[in-house]
Length: 418
Image (cartoon, rainbow, N blue to C red; front, top):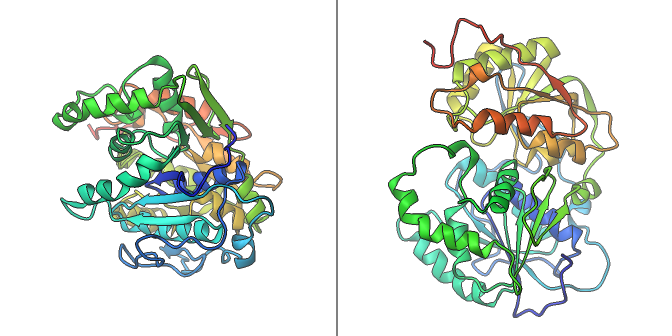
């Protein structure tokens, strides 16, 4: 869906809650040549707020564990980050950050917001979760913009916040950009006319809050279904098998990332990418520790790039017990890898990066390898959908090497430690 020329009174609104979502909005804007002129000062102050955790220096990463130096990939090149392609002026993009409370996520969002401003986009930072009255203030402040916007871009259609905002907007164009592998599930659920529910929760009984919010979720799902006067686009790097009728699917090839950063300097050995499958209750923590230990030993991995949702306790154990240098990236891994330095081999469990890293690193000599999740690693509380979904994430990945599980299924330690 190519954007039409618009006026300042009808902006494109983008709602993001994570660094990856913001990255993919920038990719979408780049693909559609959507930009504004000059720096984008927020309506609520030009400065990105300092609260929400320690701020890293430009392009830095925080490292703990043996061999940690506290230094990371090279800084974001200012000239590259501020470069804006020549061409005719297009309608404005207002990027609304619905700020989470997690310090690491907030830090990455601040860095991504800086890059968005350097691209000429307006950024509006909303403390959407800053207390009991915050949602009312946020929604009240955004309602006039939502009423005027003719296009709304969102990174997480499963988000209750976003679903609530969808009930307000009159936009005739809705765009969903990648929020990781969840995009695959969203498109499949929309195609089948199912209620919108995250894959790792599917199969469980809905709670009281789910039942209370069900009418709002149903309205959001109807809004995300194309109609005669409403267009829906999915901008994704994920493999999409079931395309809902009337939905336009546009491929995200990470051209913005590749045009702004790299190519990276490669190091010897391997780097390992962390996952939050333990934190979401899908994979048993002890099994995960054994799997990481086995991968690190087999492939000579020394660095572990932590997922922003991984617990400090788990990361401490990985540093002390496995001997890995745990790195907390200050930007999404696609940018970290593209800037470098990065290992010649990147090891990962089933996750978004097995789809995105090969695209971001095309033309380099980096090898991406994915390790399957053994069914024995799953917790008793994991969704019945979990194993099939994770296998699908691995099986549909392109340009990656597949590794077998590093822990035998008959290992004496079960997923429930029984």
